[in-house]
Image (cartoon, rainbow, N blue to C red; front, top):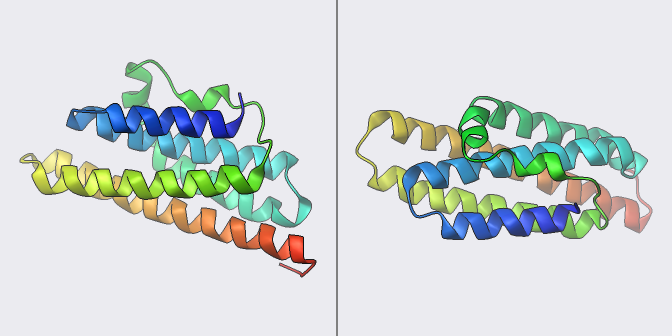
Length: 152
């Protein structure tokens, strides 16, 4: 399945997530998707962007690895369905937007929650989404430089 379809499916799931655990699971689904997109681009993307794509994959992996079990309990990781990234620019732009939406949703959960464990889980997820978003931005800059013929 193409990255854009998976990103849109994750965005819809985040919007429909009504309970705290569901929002947290969608945050980690997003991180797993970042890992998969980065890994795909590291192997199949433009040569000039492969190192940055590997960095995106690593950031997503570090973030999603800790709470992957929560996503697995809810039906599995959507990211395993990734087979292609037809339009890297569009996919990365959409992924960056989704990471921003995840961050906003997690801030709302963190502010409203009463359990310390959930609060810190949200803070960890916010930090992870921010780091991954930075990696997406770096990769988009690499692709833009490549399009203009400059060195990254």
